Structure formats: C-alpha cells, structure tokens
Length: 215
Image 1 (tube, rainbow, N blue to C red):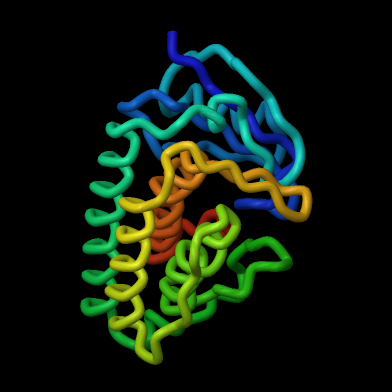
Image 2: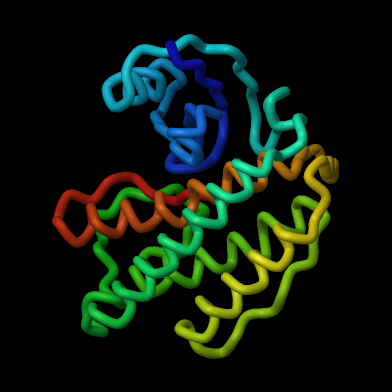
C-alpha cells in the first residue's frame, strides 16, 4: 500500500482546504485537494487507490518530515523532466489559442479570494511568477524580474529555475516568516504546480471549470 501525506488548513485550490501528497516516484508531483482533509483523501483514493496516511501537518507553507530529507538524484531528474514537458504544454496553448480565449474571464469560475489570475494568459504569467518569484526566494534562492513578453518569460523563467535547481544544495532548509521550505519540498511543489494549473486550464476550456488558485 502506498503512503500519503496530508496538509490541512492550507490556501491552495480553496481559500482554506487540504491537500494530499505522495513521495512515491511514480506519483512524484501528484496532489489531490479538497475543502477538508477527508475530502482530499477521498479524491486521492478515487484516483490512485487506497493509501496509508503517514503524516498530517496544518497551516500554510509548512513541511513534512520527509521534506527534510536531502533531495535525491531521481527526484531532481523527475522534476526537471516534468518541468520541461509541462512548459512545452504551456507554450503550445499560448501559441494555439486565440486572444479571446486567452483573455476570457469566466465570471462563474470559482477561485480563492486572493487569486488574481482569472484568465488563461494571466495563469501562464502566474506559473512563472510562482516558480521564479515565489517558490525560489521562499527557499532562499535567487528570484528574477519578469520579462516584458509572456513567450519570453516562459523561456527565461524555465532557464532560471533549471539553473538554480542544478546548483543549489540538495539539503537546503530555509525558515522565514513562519514558513519552512527545503530542497525536497521545492522540487515536489515545482513538479506539481504547472501541471496542476494546466489541468485547470484544460477543464476551463472543456467547460468543466474546477476550483483553482494553486500556489
């Protein structure tokens, strides 16, 4: 049976909700969310099968004990491969969708109150903002300024993140403002975030919008 890790009372897909994670290599960067921890676990079970809860943490931007373990070669390689594949997916959407779809704001779309990336184009900017200007500095790594053009930003942000990941210590631990970040947590979150946002875009385009507002 696989093991899972639960975050409760966090602001991700919901203003206050829960998220379930796995450190299983086959599910690296996979997350199920719900308004409550039982709902998130039920969604995980429905998608991936029964699992044993190893640890539950509460509050925004904490870390599991497993996150404190140094990141492995496999976790780094899986993260880099996932980032490369998802960035290709983002670019395809950017260049294939007309402007009216990229900039359409569906007033019925349910999002957390603090989420400002309501359109597809804004979500693509949000992906870069999150990786280069939220995740990295939260882990004590250098951020970078935005490029003026979205296509340019997608390339520059990807290059910056890859450079940082290849050079940063595998056992970094960074505490600031009550938050706890580590190299392993950073890789886990990076492997999930863009894919999660793109899945939300796919749902939006299909007319089956789901709650979004991932961090």
